[in-house]
Length: 100
Image (cartoon, rainbow, N blue to C red; front, side, top):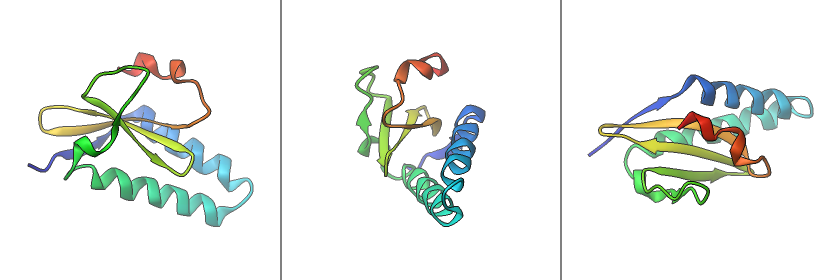
């Protein structure tokens, strides 16, 4: 079963922030990172369990995939995948825990 991938408004803001941050040094790399994150997020619809369970939560429906130094955190719902956050792997998870 294929799931529909949906981005939360907060995750969209996260992705925009990532792009703006990287763009300060390189527009090329900013674009490359964003494209890779979007590609990976669209691939989740076929294999939602391929991401690891987020260790801070330990809920099998909340998972993450790594794209370069970024965690793409998503929640598996009935027929959709909700992208909840895109955060740098050094950022504290507590800053996004209220999104669940």
